[in-house]
Image (cartoon, rainbow, N blue to C red):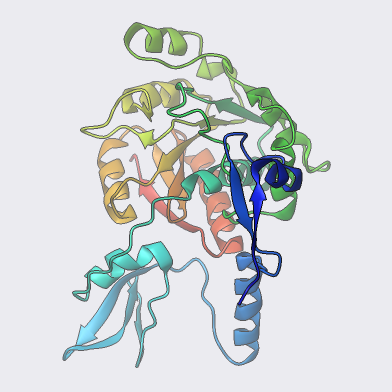
Amino acid sequence: MVGKYWLSGEALREREPAINSSILGGVFFPEAARINPYRFVCEMAERARRNGAVFRTGVEVADILTAGGKVRGVRTRDGETIDADAVVLATGAYSVPLARKVGLKLPLQAAKGYHRDRKLARKGVLHWVCTQSSPAFSRLVYVPLLTPPDKPNEGRIPHQRFPCRDFIRAFVASLNTEPRSLTRVCSLGAVEPLKRFEVCVFSPGSFIGSAAKRREYWADFNPSDFDDSVVFFDPDNGFETKTRHGQKWIRHRELSDVIARLPATSVAVVYQHRPRLDWDTVFAELEKKIDYADSVAAYAPNLAFVALAGNRTVWRRVNDCIHGYAENHPTVRCRGVSHNG
């Protein structure tokens, strides 16, 4: 039995200053332990490889094949068939749509936790795209698309689970020890001294609003100023849909205008939170709407980043980079979303 004892709110904050003052107390388990799940999985994979297992990273399973009432293998998104005597479905939040293909309904819904992922994901993916593209981009333009918080403590949840490089994790941890400020993201461009890039934040003190206020927000934004840049749009929820197009979503006509005026050497990236739909459905709907750019997505169970480019050369540059991120981070996947001509 693991020992435990009660701590007052004051005692909790002595151990962890980030705990909110509204917390009255909590239970402490001094004998409990935890592991880094990412490192654990990597070590397990390496031991399996030494014992003959073969890993194929960057390959997405699209279907489970059956014959005579038995599972016979899988089909990849590229159309390749892989025969097998047994298939282990161990894809976490991705398991639901795959299980549905063989008539199984899993009571699994990925929901809570995406706030933890978002900050690491944002910094990790953006730094990667800026520095690992060939050639690298010289500037990151962060467009926060701020809306009033839904609740007082929104955005203060620890961000620990999205896979990224260790120096990005350390950078994000440092942000939690200082007063919150959007302009502090500008230091992201200097965390890797040999791969520096400029970072600027558009209108860090303004809410995007709606109607006239929204038009006023965009009136000061001039995409043509951002040559050789990654322009990142960070709406609360992502792209608008048929039924969801308020302050928390970015609109396709807004992005279409950005792409039309963005220099041929630059790319737009949009944050997308996964609604209560599987990613295949989300990306199929986006493919219908994004007729103004080529686009590619890096995605994890709860969130995605979609890169859009109006120029085919810069799209190839980013597409290769996004695929590289997925290959180096096993729980992240990558897929093309739209091809404009």
